[in-house]
Length: 418
Image 1 (spheres, rainbow, N blue to C red):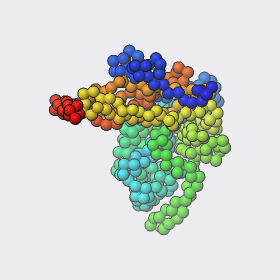
Image 2 (image 1 turned 90 degrees about the vertical axis):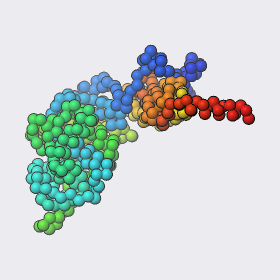
Image 3 (image 1 turned 135 degrees about the vertical axis):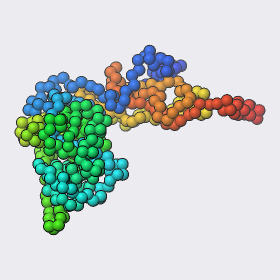
Image 4 (image 1 turned 30 degrees about the horizontal axis):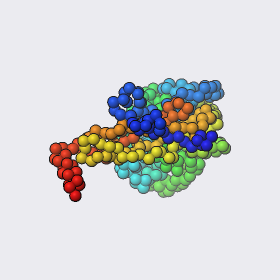
């Protein structure tokens, strides 16, 4: 029993593999042993839990995703393309924070509202042509009040025109693997039959936003806030009210966002994010029949997720020894993990029984390039592979030349003669 309270780490060497159970695999036997190297994106593949399709979801499209792993817990018509309405603004926000992260814009930059931005209908904060607002204020207008005018103002500020910004949105979506998505505008006001996405793609871009830019929750959790319009007619206060009513409805977990949307074509949509005990969930609802149904459906998904999910995150990854390098100017190279490891349990698994296996060759052949994959750390539970983390080289090692060999021989001779 005591051994089950500790996570097991198994090591093998070429000399005592059977005895110590640590397995260092060489390049020659990798193919034979069928060692599968997985990327961070593929390491958490699992099927939906049995019985998940019995949830009574009114909306025709829905997805429940765990954010840190990207694992889909529940799906309903996840790949059917539909109009997203203002859910579109999630991608707009990604590009805004990309620009901030790249140093292209700052939160205190001042943005001038164009006539085109002012002309936006639908949900808006009533910006006037020529009105100046900071980037941060416009972010609040987009996140809290779903302002179409604020979205267009930011699109024009970053890319020069909304059309150029939309092109960047589609390129970013492609980079995230959002194969069912095509944007026509930056705010979702259009009801063009070409402006489409899927519940799965919404979950993917929601995950990108909250994991890469967690500061979004500083805005998406604001219930009400005032901004000040300053125009030629003078200044006036304008109240922003959060369109995500789920912020006030949940009781057993913390809702952290994210975005609502509705048009006559899209009906009622929602991407809801929540957190409890370190588990972050994303509930996507598309084309719910009415205003209340989208929030009710999201609550069903989140309640289901928190009742059934537990997250394992490895806080004590095994120390890595330097790897021998053959025929190099250096005799070894340091190793490092490509990232951390997390796994979403859905069936009451005993995480204390998780085993870790280091799969590494005996040596690397020079030249070695920094970031080169040397092996993996594999995680298993009851004989089942849970996933892997790549092990990378932390530096370069050039191949030794003839002069390097002569110097090495001279050093050995000098040591022996002393």
